[in-house]
Length: 481
Image 1 (tube, rainbow, N blue to C red):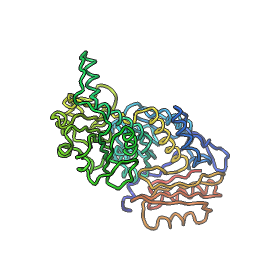
Image 2 (cartoon, helix red, strand yellow):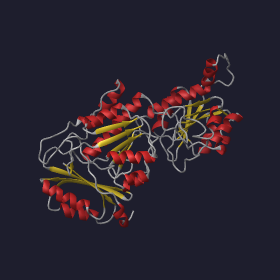
Image 3 (tube, one colour):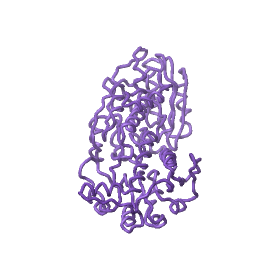
Image 4 (cartoon, helix red, strand yellow):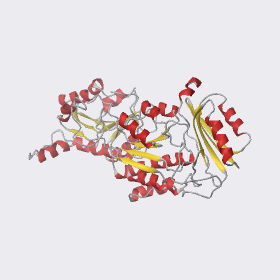
């Protein structure tokens, strides 16, 4: 991104919690609001106690300059877990919830008319470059899920909008779903259950197998794949995996050199990769032809990773003995009778296939996973809005400073173009002041700087803010105090 784009950048923005904080006042918010959500279960409580054992932000919550009397507004879509909702409300923010996803036009109107500072989504809402350009109040996006492919990350970064997600919190839930699908497919449980509901007694053993001694092939040996590896070995399965980088195996798992090697050996093939140009249709007709006769295919990754018509052919021809699919190229925006041919023209044919498990993108849909995701992303939003921390951001450099523990100190949060001379300009503006600590880092075209400045009054804060926010490389500037 060049300096010539500077004229197209959004204006600097700032937000405020539901408190009025003035320089040198003793007002403080409890640090627990940013780090300690309510317990939903004993498991989530234990997780939160471990996660917050050494809270990184034990200082006072900060308010922005210029001061806004009304609370910052956060829009949460797609039925975000109650853990996050309570955290954000307890932190003083105005939270509005919508249970479904919104289309582009509807989302733009809602965000713009409401003056929302932050938006929280799951996997269905798309935040495009157009949404970002037409909502100047937006400061941060929370993806309450693993993936972030539903957000234009580059456009968000260039607009000074940080994006956070929860890359690990639902790993166990997805791994357990795969285990259940492996067993259900090997025993044809879904077909037998459907037949019983239809009044048909069909006690058969042909084509039904134990999973002990079978080979599980994992594509993508990350947090989900590695947990799945351990669980599978505990059931007596042999585990092989393919990944684009060398990864140390857990247990007795073994990495193979190529996807073709994996396809030729696996009795069960399970996919755990992100949606990227190189993973689109990575399993198609040619790959299915290379699999063992009677193998099983499981996709709980991304909907475009598998060529569905090729999967239908593999099932109906008998090449594949069964499959489980939790994600689809196009998915309904809301619950209801919406999974038909108008959404994907092959839906009816897919539903007619034998020994096929179809689920509505529920891999991470457990109470434990959603509670932990809510706590992780909700906490990240609060830490960014209250303290300027970008730890865990997927499109910003990760920058953080120690908490401010006393009054009379202001924190500069400066998103800027990654260009030579920017720090010289910033330090020239700050040169007459006491900079207590400063940290800057860059990621691609974007850089982010935090600086704590001590002993400044309101007039000096205004002077610094106006000078930094009007500098040539500025993207977005906040002053927190």
